[in-house]
Image (tube, rainbow, N blue to C red):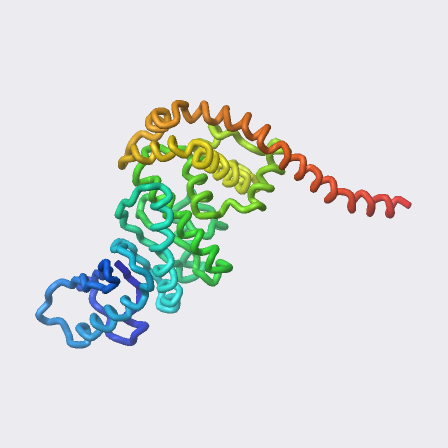
Length: 321
């Protein structure tokens, strides 16, 4: 389902009254042909221009899809000037959802709403209604409205980054759908790792913070972010590395966890039944694992820090002469 705010004005047709907003569902059959499942309430007084708009809008929507997908519950709302961007998002997002769901082995038909902020002012007004979200965020998922909000694309560099952002927030929605009180590190770890956002720079940042003692253990990361924003990148990286460990080293147990997932199910209980250790036990284990596994990386990072300091030492030596 696609809903683009202001689309009627963009086409220079009279706007459809709110009581007669159109709901569009594009279903693709196994042959790749599209079925018309668009529905609109009956109204004897409906104008001809509205009927024409319906046909034009419907065939425009058909052109948005290039792959054979069955995703009826994706809603995008944007300003008229961002329609091309909204079209591009809808083409790619369904594919990203499918790839993620294949990795997890679950295929829920969860309604997804995406709101593209018209400008900076619009985004800040949304943030003010969600006080936990900081001004520097590029996007976020609100469980209150069940909506993914993202900055205007002009404020985010690169479409790949935007795709990762939207998938990241969708994964938060996905986890919220299944689990009651999942740990924050699991939330962020799943979102970062499965949106392919665990970059080398992020890992290196974590290692440096680990050396400096700015890394919290997973148990401390269960329900709160670090107070210092500088430590957030390390938080995301460590969360992703923890999920990466579970997925790579405990693959069968990881799948068992998700096989037993149900809406609002107790996360800690199923985690214990799946992995045969508690989240606290895993926190203790992962600290020890980090000390040994990242020893070479820590040495490399330390060498990098030393080489980074050497030019400064040389400059100080020259000045003192």
